[in-house]
Image (cartoon, rainbow, N blue to C red; front, side):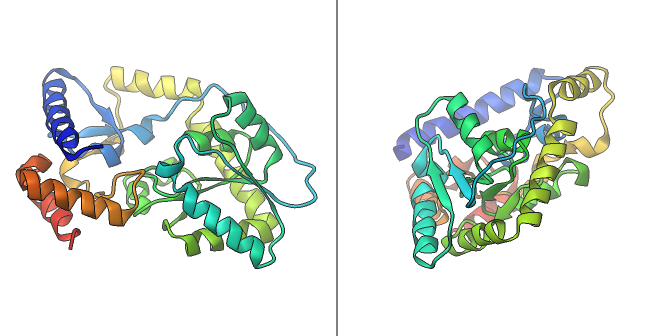
Length: 278
């Protein structure tokens, strides 16, 4: 996306957030995307992401471990790095089957999840459990999820609200280690899948999420659900490799100045972002 377009979108987004905040009784947002707010927000992960699926039990009949990757946008999900890791592991003698599905129907992907032992979700995530990983969890299949400092997102959640994905730093070597672990340690893999399944069934089934919204409507909101946007220090975003992110922001600031970040009310966060570019 051109810098000029990013600039316009940034200003418009900040303007919209401020306008909405003026009239909203409550604001629900994810920690990683809540940095423009000027009043406390309700952590989206505490409310839950509703899913229609029932808890499903599947058991593949594979003689070797099957791994599934189904990126909605290969460039944004780090698919090239994932392919490199897979190729190297094959050359190193590890035995497994790798399935990659792009531009398939949701039902085709769900069917493939049933046949897999685990999935590789993405490398540059800002959430410990996005849509694909959630679908896998309902089938009891664990997900490898890469991201820069996703632990910070988890730290903003009560322990029981933290999705149990296999979190890694987004590098080829860390990905290879995670894949090897899930191939070789069957008990660990199955336990992680079971934990993920229990989590989504308990926290993200539609009925439970609806009950959480009723709590908000009735002003029965636990204090630990709230987040101050002035304490959010997650600056990596999602769907972009860190080197590219630094270059893009540096170019952006050089052209439009640091004021264009729309973080003048959050000097600590602004300084953290600027210092991270060098």
